[in-house]
Image 1 (spheres, rainbow, N blue to C red):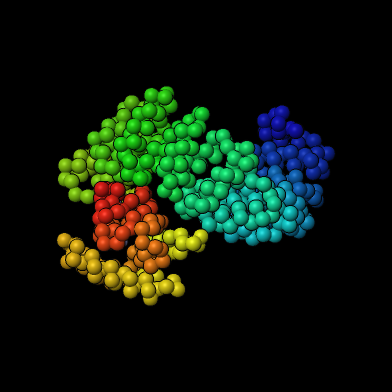
Image 2 (cartoon, helix red, strand yellow):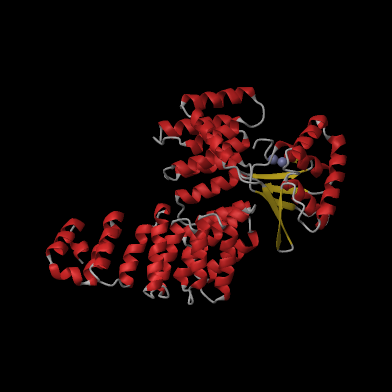
Length: 477
Ligand SMILES: [Zn+2]
Ligand SMILES: [Zn+2]
């Protein structure tokens, strides 16, 4: 109460001057939660120690006040001590305390501990499920999210919009179109059909799963479109190489009186770079700084860097590079690229077949159909050899690929798997976590010429719709 009426200093003064309050747990609790809401880590903990010294026993309110102070990775070990205290005091089976500890672990990024605790909570309510689902979603553990959501449904817990936003973002990440579609049905059944956060997540999910028409339908249906909705749909068109439509939508957004933010500029710049719309991109880049007074960040420069590093076009390269220099950004971008390389994760690709996900790493030999996949790839390599004008160069690349110890790139394995298992004419959809390399891109284009297939490859930045020897990205990616 003190802390709500007075400043925390005044409250502390009253507390210090009043001898009686030093033996009352409620007084400690009030002060501790006051320190927590002011993020005063040190004072909060010192008071907790004083409380223990004075022989006042903590109750669950004390813990609910104190645990959120540890919601940063540096304070994880202290948070774990508090968890220990909760167990010792026998409070850990109270739902509110368990949820509080769970949220603390999630915010510290300690997902293993969070999951362990989660599994031990006996009667998991919606808050518990949401804490775990959002935690995994924010930390990129998308397949965990889908598992949890499935279990939650089996347990008869009804999701709320918070749950579904986490699930949709994970579907978008994984390209899990079927689950995403079910979530949309669920949204409508539960009366969340017009929730703006869910609609934005839905646009993003459909676009990232390759269903642009559906993404557009959701967008058009929204009565009030925020800058987040526009960003999602512009990003969607950009990802699929429809730069012109993305640009058109961006201009429509401006006409509708929506003020652009830095994120929507990332989307529209990426759309321009994916479609090779250099002049339009330059225009936006300048407008961003001059007209909207938005400082371009590394994310904007990096879009330009990708653009610049794309296919040979010396005029364009010079212009982009000058632009980067002009804004003093090129060093920043280089530093960032270096950092990204250091943190470079292993490449993998996957494809859905008969409701199951088939995952491949580079040089993977663990799949049950490995023999057939590699045989298929050999045959394909031989057939495309004659088609490839730069085949010598290509062969060298392949040797490099094998010698680098990484083995054959994962997208090739996934493509071969798709060709082996699906009937002629079926579209093969492959999701890759990293940017597709030049060699694989060429290979897929050539293969699409000799087999009657359309390939859809989603890489780290965009979609490639490959058919009859050409790709929708027009080799800009
Ligand atoms: Zn490759
Ligand atoms: Zn492409």
